Length: 445
Image (cartoon, rainbow, N blue to C red; front, side, top):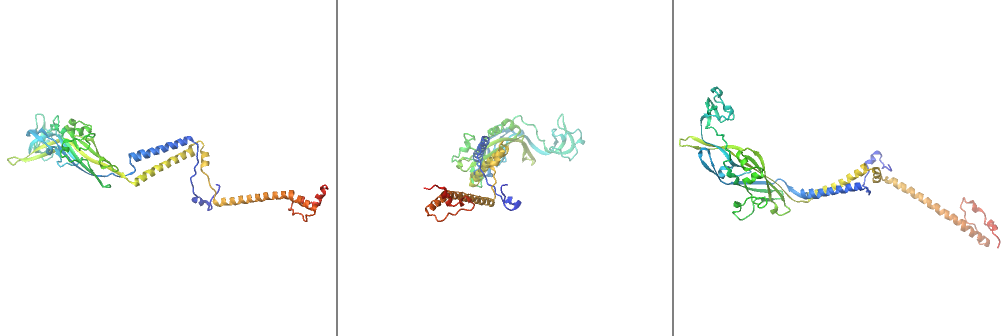
């Protein structure tokens, strides 16, 4: 320690450290420093500003509304009911159109079912029997279609099943080899979506603002040539999800439709357009539905349909950004902090890992003495300098006395003009010899 502040061991708590800059001619550390600075600059300009747009305030939770409509028609055979025309009211579930929409592509029909007794289907394991004791009366058939009556009956020439009380005949399980509504691949799905970013009070719809009433009846979505037409052909959507319509329509499946909004509100609103993507979520999707009617005998009947089809799950995501001074200042401040971190890292390399670390350490860190000691040292130095100056002044005076005063006095004594001798400083005995002796030594004129 070159100096310490008064106050004992606790005096170090009040010390202050300030930076000292030292220029080093170390090419390796200098190159490392520049590379780190270029990396930070690339991160700040490329990632923070261009990709992430760190200068913008963002709204990541838009409010969204979706309305869907299916259009198309197909003809198919419905069990014993003959050929039947299917339109949007038949194959679209639910008919009002929401975020989730089901399109019928295939079905199994069981016509004219009435409540009564009949043998259970042999495809139900709990219904297999060999005698009446295997069919306890009143027990429901596990995964079956009714309640056991206590009788074992021949279903066909090869199988015997329990008799049940339920809707008879039991449901038909014969699946068509091809989808009955194969024309559904040319059906169109209209998706109208509106988003509202509450933070910026900005709303946008995915439909083109046009005065042509026939535009949406004739256009079809194309990501390059017609991106503003939200009318999608079903086959195009299935293929975009990585499937073929024939395979998916036979047993059904689920397709996710994702609508993504990424709006930069620093530009005109016309540039805020949605992006659509499609993905296969599940295979084999079906459910059952029935239509009921009364005959002339006031007996209740129903037509049961097991529907296979494509379920469309529509989700809306998005974000909007707009310039704001606060996130811009934070982003730039972060970049400046990274520049400082690069300098700190290079200092660590220079002071701890370099071969000349000890030398750089001594040059970088220097302890300044306490100010009271500095003042005391300066005062002592001034006193030493003043004493040296006085000594330098005495020596020329003595020389003057030796060379000038004595000679002048002695010359005056010879002429009688010198009446007194000059004052001789004490300690100089050589000057006590009288001028007469000197005069005696000089030759007479």
